[in-house]
Length: 313
Ligand SMILES: Nc1ncnc2c1ncn2[C@@H]1O[C@H](COP(=O)(O)OP(=O)(O)O)[C@@H](O)[C@H]1O
Ligand SMILES: [Mg+2]
Image (cartoon, rainbow, N blue to C red):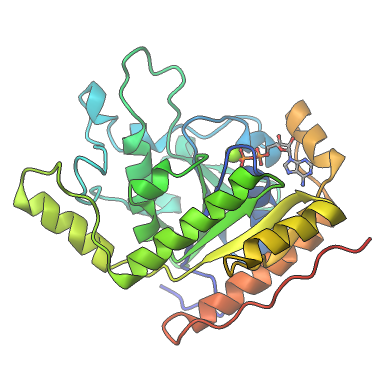
């Protein structure tokens, strides 16, 4: 595969945060900015509980769910298991986009490739849990035949996917913090979890009966390369920005970017329209700089990320 001079090419970046904090918004903004910078960008919708991401990319129909491509969920007799019960790797999860049947992928006007792990809605009563979607997000490796891409994974709200092990497959994690104490707490929890993984804490395996499964879970965690979380403030105004920065600083977390409250963003989501805000795209540029900077330091010790100043209008 061709080597790319773009530092984020080949990396997998996960978006986390509490419900409604702005994970999908920032995924869309980041994808567009990276595409504009010349990256090949794939976005995996890994949120089984929410719909509408394709609309924010200006795409008419969502892609068909990859859980069907991989043969369906274990709960309905399919091949895709839950990573908690079965930590082993999903088979054939390395995929060249060109070789994927076209119904599983969409392309936005700016050239971003959109894929979806799968949704729970419509799968019927007692359909199971969405662990299989988390496994797809954990294990899928997207690229092009002759090129690497950067993969952004837009996760479900809260901590569940992280507890299921999706962090072990990521190069970087972004936590979106909106002006709520719950969002701050989520950033603290995520950052502590990454620290523990880095220190070599083992995953919970008391429920696994077969020693091979325990070994598989441990092996995955031992290969984790994630080093830190990057915090992004969203929907902030000068006051809330200052409060959040102070609260996070008490836990030594320093936001790398801030997206301000912008009514045009909520309007786009309300109307199911393409997200097209120039201001927020400029603001998300700081996140790109932090991601690229962090990326270059991987394996060479973590550099301090500059403290982002509170907004002044
Ligand atoms: N910067 C912003 N300014 C104004 N409203 C925002 C902003 N970011 C997100 N929103 C609003 O918050 C809602 C939730 O954002 P979303 O990105 O869907 O969050 P998540 O993916 O974390 O659940 C959106 O529907 C939109 O109305
Ligand atoms: Mg979302």
